[in-house]
Length: 318
Image (cartoon, rainbow, N blue to C red; front, side):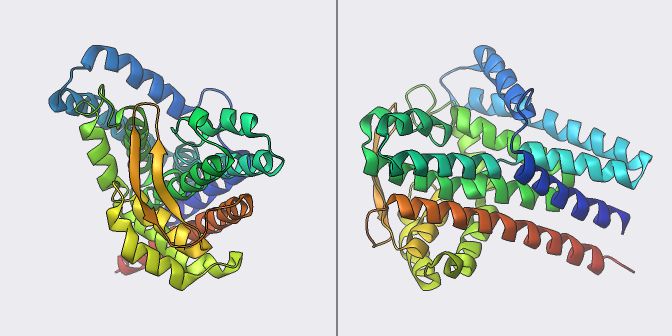
């Protein structure tokens, strides 16, 4: 029962810390992990899947061990310490507030026609090539990023914190960070980044579908269509190159009545992606609606996470 209480409180407090504070401004653990991963890449890099798997294998278990050690040490000191460790791990692994702030900032820039400033902001949302995008392309790229990262940056961390506490959420954040660093289909990372990309696909599978389900449930709050979200999810998601991003982006597209996908320019390649949804091209107003829907889904996810912990603990009672 104590473990259940600690996990519920830790997950909720971690979520609230992210909502109130956003990302830590200095010494962010995810940034420090990224620096360590980049330094190790200088040693481990080879143009092969085996080298990429070794790179992942050298980094991710360390996070799990750190999480286990911290959680066990906190458990010996009592409930408040256990709550604090889970809350801290959840907070530093979450990025929902930074995501919504960036999405709103992008909508404000595009709303007043400042395309150059919007291009400068885009890298904080996604890895597209901003120089190749006009106002419409920036709007679509931002909306797609808000949709996908609702799952990656907030729903998935909450889910893993609920399931496995500090070790699970730290491992998840490490996997997702490595995918964002090396999980590309560029000439350098096509083979080396394969393990990180596939592991991220597995890690985000449940969270993406939980996110899409919450989009369906909460779509009416932003004037959206639950049936449209379900239709686009069922019809279009499987055609997307990502087994998870396609699910979430299709649900957002259907809920908001917009059309996503199509030619997508990254710095290393042009991808011709399938169309998601059958509505209009997204507008700045749609981007604002997507940010609001993302915030609602994040709040819904913490409720689902808390209920799942409670019900799991209840079933284990003698």
